Every structure is written in C-alpha cells, then in structure tokens.
Length: 352
Length: 148
Image (cartoon, rainbow over all chains, first blue to last red; front, side):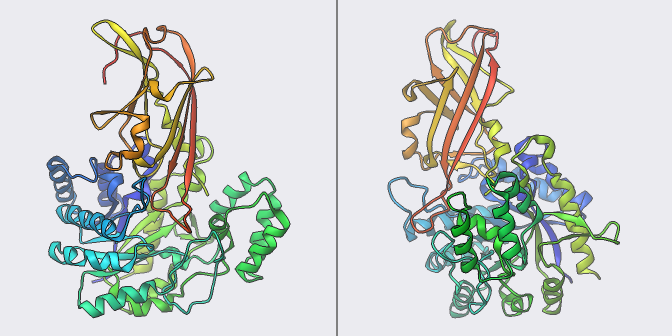
C-alpha cells in the first residue's frame, strides 16, 4: 500500500466552463492518461440539479465510475451562510445543509465530504450522526492561512479585513473524534499550507493590475524582512489609497508557510484525504520531464506522510488558472497539462 | 483577487445572440441567453442585481423575465429564490417584453452587468460581492419566433 493519487475536477474548471470537457471526459483523462483512480468534485459544479439529485444523474455517475474503474473519494461541500437574504444562516440550518450534502455524497458513492475551515465545530457535531448512518466521513479542510498547530508563528497579516483564523481548528476536530469515538470526522489538509512564497502567476497578475507596480515589489521584497502586520502597516502608509485588500495582500506577503511538514505527524490518523493544491508547475532546472511548484513544498510533507504510513488519497487541485483569466482566451493556461505535470511530480515523490 | 474575468464573456451567449420571441405569429419581445460567470453556480438569491442595457439605454427591470430550471421569474423575485440553483453550464434565457421585438437583421450593442455575492464569505459582517459585465455587438436573428 502507498499514497494514492486522484484529481479534483475543480482543476479543469475552465475546460468545463468553456464547454471543452465534460465530467465524463475528465474521468477518461484521470484513468487513461494519469493512470490513477481517485475522483473528487465540488458537488454543485458537477451535479446538474444540485441540491436535488436525479435518478438519471446517479445512474450516469455510477456507470461512468464503473466504466473506468474509478473511486469517488471526496465531495467538496460548501456552506453558504449568506444564502438567505433576510437572515444569516443559523447553525441548525447549516447542519441541515451539511446533512443533505452527506446524503448526496453517499448516493454517489463518496467516502468523504470536505467542509470549509469556517464551518463551526458544533455544526459538524450536529451532522455527525448522519455521517455515521450514511458511512461518509466529514473532513474539515486545513487551508492556508489556518495552521495545523495552534502555536505556529504568525505568517500572514491577521488584522481587520483578514480571514478570522481559528487556530484551534484542528484540535477541535481531533477532540470531537476522540470524545465521540467516531471515525467519521477528520481533516483534509490542503497542500497550500506548505506554500512558503507567493506564486509567480499571482505576482504577475497583481503587477498587471497595480496602479503602482512598485507597491507590489515593496511587498515581495519585504515579506521575509518584517512581521506581516508591520509590513501591512508600512505598505498602507506608503501606498494608500491604491492598495490591495488584506486577503489579496496575504496571497503575496506570507513570510513563510502557515504549517511545518513535521506538524503533519499528529494529524495523520485523522486525515480523510488531502488536497494537492498547486498554482504553476514548471520544469525543474537540469531535470527534463520533472516538474515542481516553486511556491509549495511537496518533498518534505510527502516524506512525513510516507513515514507515518498515510495510505489515503491526494487529489490534485489546480488553482493557478484564476490568475491567468484576466486577459484573452489565448492566455488561458492549459489545465490538462498542468495536472499531468503535477502527477509526474506526485508519482516521483510517492516512489515505490 | 483574480475574479474570473474570462468567464464574464458568457454573461451574454454569442451562440444564440439576440432573438425575437412570440406566440402564434405575434412577436412579444426579444431575448438572449446567459451563463453564470464562476467556477460553481449560485442560488438566485445571491444575485444582487442584473442590469440590461440595449444601445446604451437601461432596460427597465420590470420588462425583464428570467427563465431558469423550467420556470419564469421576475428580477425583483431574486432575493426570495434561495432554493433556485443556477448550474454553471445552464444558460438562463433573459426575455425583454417589447411588442414587435427588434427588427430582424438589425445590430445592437447589448450590455449586461451583474453583481453577485459569494455566499460562503462573511468575514466581520462583510461579504464578497463580485462585479461582472459583458458587452457584445449582436445582430437580431432572422427567424420569426424563438422558443425556450
């Protein structure tokens, strides 16, 4: 047994949107080119009729899985607190939505649902009996800038306007699993937590749009030289009012990764699956045919996962297309090729 | 943040362009088709506004009928449509009620602007609202009556 490879069909979002690939074409690519079997989807991006499931779709889905011998690994579910325009969704309503998504996942044969970092722990606990009943694990995503370990040093601006980070998120999930003895709640680490520098496609995007490109270079040049909050204050002082919002700033200004690979060890028993996040796969200098994402460390986390005996799935999640969608269609990145490169890297890192 | 600019071009579907629609030989108005510009769909309740301009002039919201999931809606109903999901690959039909429609073969500048909130955001009481727009020069199709 070894780490297993899969693909989140989110990676091919442009291909889908512009009508060049259907989910069935993606299945074929996963099997016949990438030679792996893990499938991950965003429920509402693939399931026509969501939040209702038609018998036709269920039949079609299982038929295609069987045709290529694929495995439905994780279904990414959202929580939309602002879905209702007259009130913010309360926790009971949120749990009902999650339960409905769990039932959908079960009917499609998924082992897991992934919920977002910001889903409150009591919402997950309310939905846990449903997860048990339908045998679907709830995995909470550990997404940058959320740390694995509450004590991890601050690596991005955390003042007003940034995402409110619950540093105890992973601890809360592990405590819930331990307290209830349930195997149906766990974590979905996103490899983006090992991103330790801004991606080149992200930088290029901001340079194309900045009123004052010097302000972008100021961030890049100083991100490792000062505390993120200090950097933001200085940046604002120098360049306001033409400044980036705090969340965009954080995509350029992380001083380091928000988690260390070593910290994975304590959460491995709770991992339901992993998001293989990447932005830009480029050829490694001097190694033709070998690829890497220069912004995200994959090597050390893979070593830790192998040492700890992780045998679950890592599903490619390509997200670099978004930073290349501001120009003509001729500049759109080739998502299929990017995912193929990512699998070259993962295959190599998994080894024998 | 990068905001799906490339997707906005599908706010107006070039494939069908502008067509007249009607019933029993009487033209009741004109229509175009429209896709939601993101990587996942949306509940219609999350669309804050949709503005349609023809040749620089705003089409009154009350003249617009929005067809999706086999149903007909007014734009003013959107806030209540929190169970009506717009799948990313489905084209909605936007109909503008206008007796006689537009002259077949005539060219028009059509502009669509949409403000839509991203409902899973909600940091410190703020949420992300994306602003999309698309403009196209289109020729009204020659055929007499379009159907949904």
